[in-house]
Image (cartoon, rainbow, N blue to C red; front, side):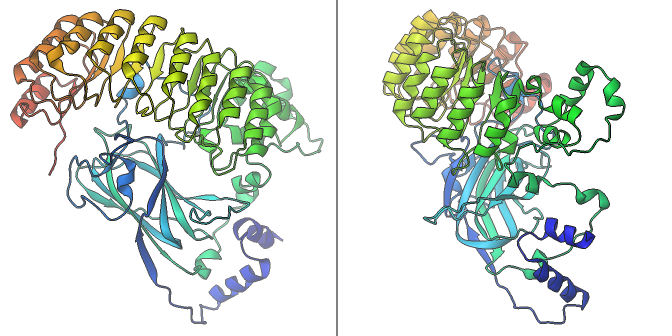
Length: 605
């Protein structure tokens, strides 16, 4: 009986007879000759999805799309535009005023901050995955394989994701190129869809990747499939895979055994609640199956005031939301980022959950949720009247018309629309009615026609704004900067990276420094016109500056940098990469004089 249970839990894809036969073959020393399998090597054919990238939506420089095909750079090392680069690195991002509070109950094993999904030509049973990293390697924390063939017209009923490899964030000993090929675990289905999840928080600079190789065999490796693992007696509890069969995060009724609750009956209710509050959501579901007393505690709505479902994106579906629904009546903060794609969550399931649990919501994170449509946002706007934070970053498949419903959320303090297709009319409507905005992210919003008009409306309607991200906005001019400075004088963060229409000769950067004395973060990335006069004005007007990025300027001298470093004692990050006047000798001097400041200067080999 014990052996049968082991087979049921470990060899689900084969019958009991097949597994027993395979075991006998192993015991007999594998006397039968096995067919020779040929390993297939293939590069990624297509980049299907990703959470962020450094590049523009209208070019190939520093974008995730560079991962398709053969290497462009490897084995060279350094900062190359032909590679794939994520939007952030390090921990300084979490120290900004725009950073959000972390969610409780996030599993310690979940380290992922960004992801990308790659499709390959031919499904194989993976034997190896190789990632060609060309600059500051070490960000990859998890590699997964999917049972879905992305090129097939018919979606399977059950889409499975299996972890091939996972580890904690690490920093490689050297920033130079390497071929990363971790030992992967075997899976019992063929795949041509891989997902790489990364965490760049421990890295010194942006990580860059050039290509991904999938190696595998066309036929199922039989002995690997039915290999009998060493099973401990404590491993007979329900696995996460079995829980997912009944709806992923669902809790089943407690067993009907009158065994008593031990000393838990004597503990105060509040103390048990405190103990239970340290458990992750799956652990809550498991604990609820032990006895009626603990089931009552695990089902208490106070345990679900804030809920992060992002770590469980491979298993979250309509059934899980339906089972969680009765427990989330007091829900205030929820993170559903990355969840529900490829039909796992439907519009009906999401809207039903929001209607039942969204009346008290103040924070809703829906980054990369491609199941969203106009009806979904309409239900959010109708139900969540008190919503303060809304994150729709990288929801790039959401129809432009859907964003008009956000204007009904008049109490919004934080709105993240990075890499969305919001259009000008909807944006102006939002700014007209959402006058309490404190943090706004419009990075890489390519459908906005005139950023000057948007900034002008922002300066009139949202005068309490603290942070504004205009990363890679196409056409903001010195007129827009002047109106922003006049209307939003409380700004602490401003990202104007890759805004090529701004020119220092107009005096816009000096005006910005004089008018925004509370600036803590300023990104002027890739603006080649930034000069000494701009840095001198920052030195005089912005003593609280903590993060400054002037990558790519050719007109800043070492003398101006020294003055800036002396005048801004709180400075912690300074990026002078590709600043032609700042040579290696100057870098060594400044680094030794100001060891508490992280001064960045990338290289190209």
